Structure formats: C-alpha cells, structure tokens
Image (tube, rainbow over all chains, first blue to last red; front, side):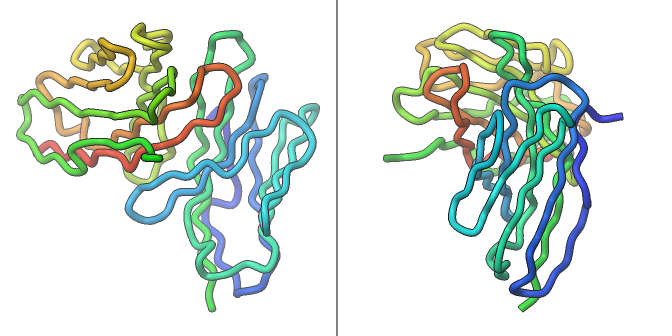
Length: 111
Length: 114
C-alpha cells in the first residue's frame, strides 16, 4: 500500500464542471503539496498547505489533518486545466524534507 | 528570473555506459532535490542537498547512483553502468531553504537506456 494515494486515477469531465481530486496519506505529515504536471513533464507547484484551506483563482485545496485527507477542487473547469495532478506529502521529522508522491490523477476537460 | 534548468533535456545511452545529468537551481536557493519519475508513476525521491552537503540520500536506489553539489549551486546526478531500468525522467527541484518552502521543479531530463 502506498503511503500517499490519490483518487480517481483518471477523470474526464465537461468544460464548466466542478472537479474534485482526493488524496489520502497514511503517515504523519508536516505539509502537503499539490502539483500540476502538463504533457512533456513540466511540474508546477500549486499549493503547499499544512492546515485548513487555500484558494488561488479557480483552484481550492483543503486538508483535514485528523482524517489524513486532502482535496483539490477546480471550479468552472476549462480544457486548459487538463493535466496530471499530483499530491505529495512531507514528513514530520525535522530535517526530513523529502516528498512522498501519489501516482497522480489524469484530468481531461472536454470542450 | 530564471527558473530551475536541467540539461540535457533528453539523453539516450547504451546499457553499461556512464551518464551525468545537470541541474541549475534558482539563484539563491539553498535546497536542491533530485527525483525520478517512471512512466505512469508519480515522482520518487532520490536525494536532497542543503548547501553543499547531501542531507538525505536515502532514495538513491543503489551505489551506481551518486550526486554532487560542490559549490552549493549546480548539482550533477551521476549514474554508472546504466541499466535499462534506469530509463525515466529525472527531475530536479530547488527551494529557498529546506524547511517548509515551496519546491520549484525543472523540466526534467528524459533518460533512455537502450
């Protein structure tokens, strides 16, 4: 069992739909990252959060530390949102800075 | 300013050869990370540097893999006696400092071992 799991693995939706991608982790963490990876490999960091909720434009990330669960939401989805979304957890040990990644959710938004 | 850059963008080599992959972090970033991403998988941690020293190399798969950052800026990931299973995208990221900072990723080097 992976320490960080995402669901769904693949998601196809119509333009304008509200999107939710889930991430569950089994270890204690100090922070959780949401990353976006477009075809060709470039990775962009979307959010880093350790509690509560963050919003940037149409993207919202939430985390529930007690339930070891985070969600990434996209409102009014657009074809340009099509990408792989990856969550990654950073451990709690001071000095342990490595990220443990989920396998990603491939999102396709159809016009 | 410039982001994280990696060279080469693509590398094709033969089994058994030696390869070097280079990462130029964002200027002033003290922490540098190497990850490996196999097809269809999420990235896996290899090693991270704080300054010149390797703070955590627990992700290096075996002693064929080695990384250096002699002046605390550019880093080189070295792979000896490459195997077909080493084929992957090798990603580099940097952050201002190690603790609690956003990591900025480079475009990756796609390594193919024939």
